[in-house]
Image (cartoon, rainbow, N blue to C red):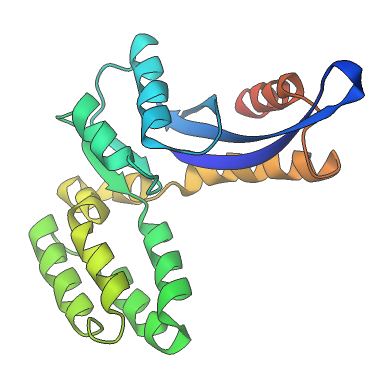
Length: 208
């Protein structure tokens, strides 16, 4: 599950243009991409709304949900799917390390994160993750405290069979669809001409 922000330029009565910010929430299940759209930003109330919509459409149970770290999503999934493992994107974690810790510290930290992916189980991975974080806790206190607080959510994939870990640890598969939508947006001049055009482009990409 991943999100994609895009600009919508909608013609209103009188020729006035309305610029709206949309979040396209894209998820992948059973090797098939599906999409929904949300107006405004990814806020807890809207997260709850779209997940309830998915439940009504039949997604009543899930073994694991892999997603980016949207605001309120951890708590919402925990409430609606209490038996579901929620995996925060491991690649996003490594991107955040690069943006927050600087080149000199990020390189060895991310190298150890690569090694942690090979841990035999979640307990070994958690111990190695904590040890790695402790080395940088003084220099990057706020960031390290944040990711340590979500360590279990970043390492859920280690509780599953090795052959599926690569598929559930990140949202990269869904991001490829987001990239296709972004290319269409640029060809249209930087924004979609209407909500309907955006919906059509989404359908075409999903059905490819």
